[in-house]
Length: 154
Image 1 (cartoon, rainbow, N blue to C red):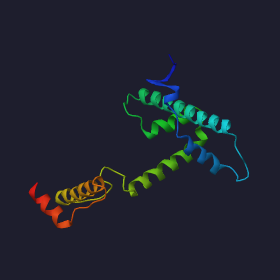
Image 2: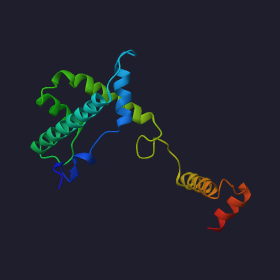
Image 3: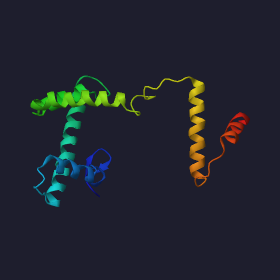
Image 4: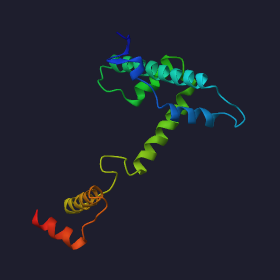
């Protein structure tokens, strides 16, 4: 049986997308620098370990405050406790930028900041269902009139 490093997960179950990590590593280095594959793997493992460490300490900070949800403030405090205080300002700036980016993105917020009436939402849902049906029927789309007649029958 494998040792469990994280609650309910074996070490092999917990990782980061290697292709993404390799891309980040490559972007951070000058173009003429090459990184051996085992070195890339080591860096990915270090990142996973760092995330585990910060998550665990964030949980401890959260528990000390009798909270049940880890908040960004808990992560910042954990970084300070772990000796990464010099990075807090940069991490906080990245967090603020992330909040701004997600507010502007279509996936940001529960409804993506799009306000519509219930009727408009139902009409949009029906349109999306019709598109999905068309894709499932090998790209054969129903004529618009037939679609609207069908939605009236429902």
